[in-house]
Each structure stands twice: as C-alpha cells, then as structure tokens.
Length: 232
Image 1 (cartoon, rainbow, N blue to C red):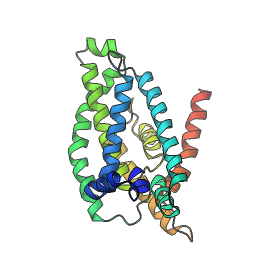
Image 2 (cartoon, rainbow, N blue to C red; image 1 turned 180 degrees about the horizontal axis):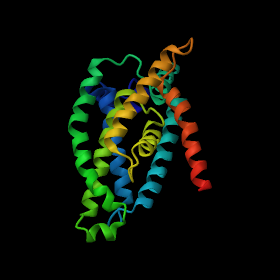
Image 3 (cartoon, rainbow, N blue to C red; image 1 turned 120 degrees about the vertical axis):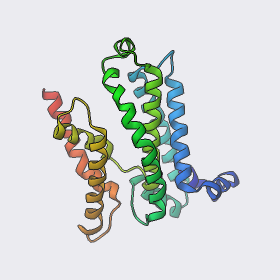
Image 4 (tube, helix red, strand yellow; image 1 turned 90 degrees about the vertical axis):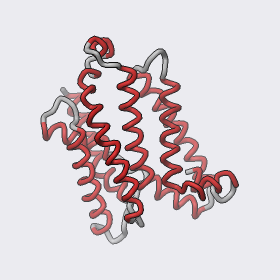
C-alpha cells in the first residue's frame, strides 16, 4: 500500500518501488510485520493466545493505516490499491508464476517436515518438551515458513480472502485427520482459487476480482462451521 499510494510523492518510497517492485515490497512488508508480531509476543517464549492477540492488534493498526492511505491517495492510486486489497489474478502472467513456484519448491517441503512436530505442540508446551520437541525453535520455524508462504501468495495476487480459513476445514472433514492436512489443503486451495477465478471471469457481465468470489463462497461455510461448533 505504501508503494502504491506514496510511491509517486516520496522519493525514498519511489526508489524502493523502482528497486524491488510491488510484489517484493509486499513480501518484505509481510516478513517485517511477522517480526513485529513475534517480537511483541515474546515473553520468555511464545504462547498461542498472546501471539493471536498481538497479531489482531497489529492487524488493526495496519488496517487503520491502510484506510488512511486510501483517503489520502489520488483517485487512480486508490482504485489500484482497492483492487490489490480485494485480491485479483488480473494481468498475472508467467513472470509472476516463477517466484511463487520457487517459493513453493523451497518452503512446502520444509513445512511438511516441520509438520511432524505439530501433533506434539497441540498437546501443550510442557508435554511437547517432555517428548523431546524444542518448542520455541519448532514454533519459530513453523511461523517463519507459514509467513513466507502467505507473503509470497499475497505479494503475487493480493490478499485473497477465506482460502486459508475454509480449505483446511474442508480437507479436515474429507480425510478425517486430527488436524488439517497440509498437502491436501495446498491442492484444494489451488482448486478453489481456480474455480473462483473462472466464476469471476465468466459468470457475470462484469469481471470481478477473484477475492470477491472466494469471500462469497467461503464466508457462508465458515459461518456454518461456527454455528455448528457452538451447538456442539
């Protein structure tokens, strides 16, 4: 957002934009945000609830700054930024596929290896330590890998809503695992995005950003899961 809105008015931001481009700037922003959340959450270790609450707070600050930049921006930049925030595959070509494929080739195998420790971490930090898991190191590695994957995806197509929230829950019910399967979630996430993009391009007279379709498909299912969980 800073690159889109302030790139033409601030020389420093303009030079960063020329040097790294919008996707890499978004990637660096995602990693920087993760470092801030992790640093503010650290109190002789990381607790899940504290990490979530700090993440919510940092996210609220980032959304406030984003809203301010949309008000401040020129109308053309604001329109471009709005499309980016919605999430869109418009004008994406093979030049955008290469960095995503490279990141997947590196980070997905690492994530699958690190996933072996998730079962122990679900039992609590004390139990995980008694089982020989280095809790802080394992959690840090998992968070870094997840942030890298999410930042790469967002840098390439913008923040496409509800894919990461809905798809693991669907796969969890399809395969019957005690926790969401990572590899199946990767495949079905791509399939949901592909189907949503086809709908966004062909179902209506006006082409829509794919993020709108994923939100329309994903939000009702997530609400149904919450209602069903509350009843149980």
